[in-house]
Image 1 (cartoon, helix red, strand yellow):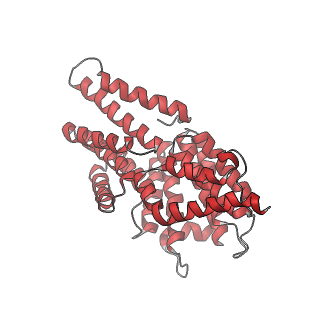
Image 2 (cartoon, rainbow, N blue to C red):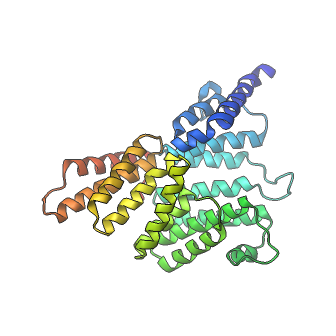
Length: 331
């Protein structure tokens, strides 16, 4: 029995000391999710992540499976990631023994599964999963539905921790992006505003702000979108979080294109692609390739140069290859 547990105990030590204490922040900054996944394999028999992790307690198994799912998402393996989130949910206890409520991990998994469904183009499923994320947050925090709906109004007597605000803000931002993708722009605007209001002075995060900026661009609020992304870019550069800079440059490229500032757009797209190729976040690379490829094709058509260049074709073809390989269809 003890001999059986030794590899898992060693793996826990390696993962905790090497990844969490020393290099976790660096991995996330650099987008080194393949390295993270390789370390996580130590928790599984024969390093096979499709077997059950060798952990004694259910919560430990959930943490490992959840971490694997996150890595697979960033590596563009969406279908596999979704199945690992399901496995993590199966390993979660039904009730938190300390709070007596639904574990917070369930609402986080529901949010991540919503993101996967969006990438896969399953917006109907994403809407249902986003609603489950909000419901799970409410149950995990012991909040009534009315309290959740009134959070943007700062309901008197309802004190939210930093993590509470993060959760609710993320939920609303995801709901807003789904509204945006399905064409319900007024509803999207409302949810984005609520998310920003709850967020308050929390640190900038990639998902809501970039979604929000793209929405602002679509509804014609170009200056607001540019201010948001420039502030975002400056924050990430200051903290050397290169894993998020690619998306910032991509959106700034889109904004420059809208303003017919093609030289500036080309610079942003080029930088976005350089950064995306230097990390293992496949969906970020796909978005950078699509942005530069589409820009090049449109710019050359507007300039009367005839057929799109080989560079434009190669960018779009590479993006399509990665998307088909990872099961992404929301392009």
